[in-house]
Amino acid sequence: MVVGSTLNDVLSVSAPSTKEVEEESKATSTKEPLCKLKQHKQVLEKYGKPEDVVAGIKGVKEPLPSTPLSGMYNKSGGKVRLTFKLEVDQVWLGTKDRTDKLPMNSIKSVVSEPLEGHDEYHMLGLQLGPTEASRYWIYWVPVQYVDAIKDTILGKWQYF
Image (cartoon, rainbow, N blue to C red; front, side, top):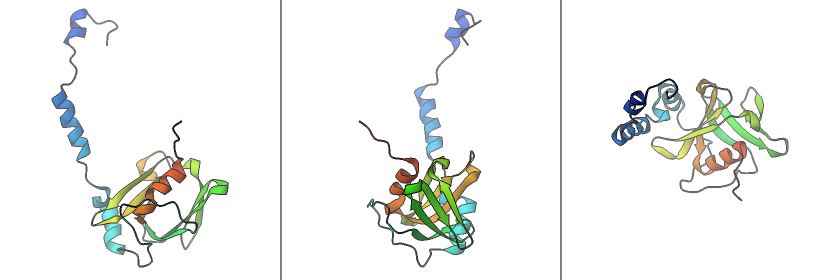
C-alpha cells in the first residue's frame, strides 16, 4: 500500500476500531457446536450411545490405557477400536472389516468437542488430509482420554 501512494492516501487508511474487532470475534466465537451439524447429529441420533463404551469420567485426565480403546462409533455407525503402537509410531483404527495403520506424523490435527447432553464423552476428528472433509470422526470417546490421545498423536511440547 505504501509503495506508490501519496502521503494523503497513506494517512487516510484507518485501522479497524476496537468495536469492530470485538464484534468480529463474537461472530466467530458463537459458532454452532459440531455435534449439532447435520452429519454428526444424524450419526448420534441413529446409533445412540454404544452399550460397550468405556465409562467417561468428567474432570479427570488419564494416560492412555495399555489395552485398545473400544466401544466407539465412526460416521457409518461401525464399531471403532483405537490401538496406539508407540514402538512403531502408529495409531491403528480398527473396525470389524479392516484395520488402518496410520503413522502418527500423517495426522495433521486432532479436533474434539463434547457431545451435547453427554459431557463425559467427546467426538474426535483425526485430520488425515489437507481439508476438513478428510477428517475421520470417532464418536463417544471418553473425555478422560482425549488429552492423552492428542498428546500421543501430535506430540507433547516440552518447555525448557
